[in-house]
Length: 236
Image (cartoon, rainbow, N blue to C red):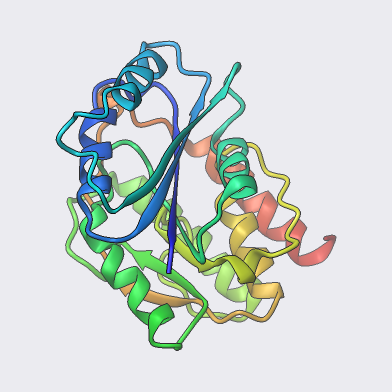
């Protein structure tokens, strides 16, 4: 089985080398698709240097491929994820942020329900596992959006907005995603649930960062997520 790790990146020059090392150190056969979404802080230049330096310690023999896709302008996380999904070759796909909030050591937890045949879609829940305390209103917003998801789509998720979404390539086959920004999270969830997939949740660790460290999501993205949940339930 080949795992595809889709990693959207935007202005993560402080963390990109470390997260790339952590991802590639995981002993799974995988391809890593990095999508630089118009970074302006030197991230893309660092990525080019890292990918050209094949003697770096984290380029292990089990890595099938590491590719860099460059967006000339910043289009948003959703656009980056879509670019990665379009070229993914793996049997199973994992979405990975580049900011060190999520730990690649949790890949085995995400993959186990798929490998054992229990589900084709697995989410890593930040609220079931150990985690650094979040901003209070972020937690309220996350739980509210998950609550709305459960009502609209008749499910029992604990963390719809999690980055760690893992699914078989078959589960998204033919899926025409449209979101450009953070509303990719509710769109993916809505479309998977409407296709009849029951999402399996596993506990993951979470080390949330502060705004001064580069955190980008705001309350406006929460409103966009809410509109997306309603739109894909009623109109799409």
